[in-house]
Image (cartoon, rainbow, N blue to C red; front, side, top):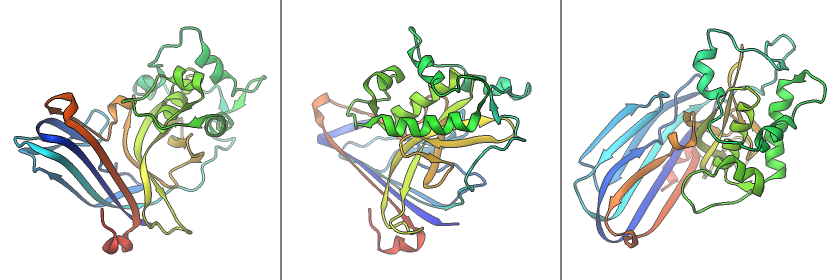
Length: 297
């Protein structure tokens, strides 16, 4: 199981010293049987007046910083070492209760899954629902794993990845109609499509680690977003429509949420004129833990 160190540095720059409002930082990976945090450090400059940690409604770790200093820069540096143990390749077997679609969720689990089954975005003319049904076989039942994998790879192959400078995640209908978007846009499209099929799905924010050769990680990496799907008897399974990944290979989970707006890695405000903001730099490196001594952020 690889030991990885994630270096994440974000710096905001301003034309002159400004004051800062509350900032929420969601950068600490989410512990689990497949991912264990061994060490974590968060440095902020200027130093915040207060820094407290909470677990949000989904159990994600969130740091909340408040400030009493003005500055021309605001820098967040997170360094985290994790033990990452990706599960073996996932596949359903005929003995699994969700092997064929449609399937039923357990009556005891259904109330807890309802928020992840209920669509959150409008689809007035049914375009999104119709697109989702394209992944069903003409004659039921359809193997559930086939639906999930073909949708994952279908988005990756048919859509054009496009960086956007606008804040937030675009409406899934916009992603569908333009055939383009970011990883967060792709994830939301897949989530909303699955919800229209009655399949529980939620948003995941985290990091994509990029091995250079074999299992060695020497600096590639980025923030990323993908999808978790809940299947009875199997639990939450990851699907990454941007890269066509099934399971947690190369995916380091930080936060899960019902909606992308609930899983923003770094969010806050500054107090000053709009034109005071001059730019932002983000630098992310994911390296094998034994490479951290010669890696700087």
